[in-house]
Image 1 (cartoon, helix red, strand yellow):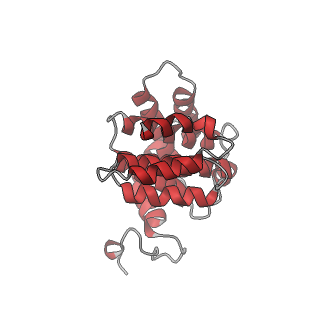
Image 2: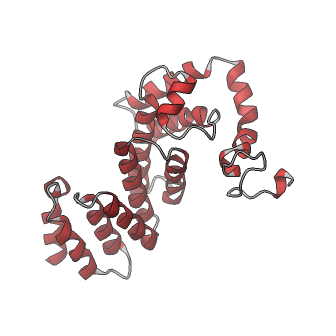
Image 3: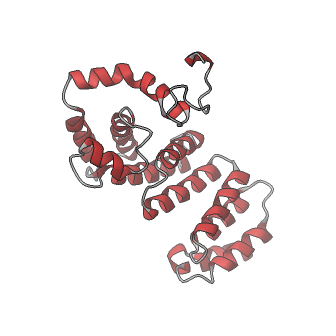
Length: 229
């Protein structure tokens, strides 16, 4: 099948078993950029510079942090292989300058992008796409990062007005972590923000969240009182 006839989500014609968008399409898309990067300073040095400016520049504007971390991610994305199923795989294969630097990048880029979407400074649907790229690319990432990215995706979906999807993903969080409040809180938020506004359903989720040990971390009682009042 000619590459031009292959859909982004179709199996890659090279036979790798990966989706086309995660295999040969990605390689084709970034070939020119990759050549340019390799001709200049090494990509690892560029990654380290962007990573440090994004992670450790505490006085930088959020938008500048997002720009730097996005550029750092693009350097990595150009070099991903279908066998890279966790950030650690990539770090080990490519010889990253610092341990867990990719994990830290994904963590901070996720939260800064969702914050920007909340403030109206970023397209929330594009943020959703970015988060789903992370989640799909790294199915074997560690549990802590996976939980965080799934949580950020629910928040981004809610900011995008995709309330049914947000509620569905929040329920998946509940199924993943039934003894924590986060999934219930995010489900309640999706119901509350929905123009159809199911307050009774939101209260039910918050009441369940309030029974969890980490409820104070999420100000569940205050959220509940605000809804009931």
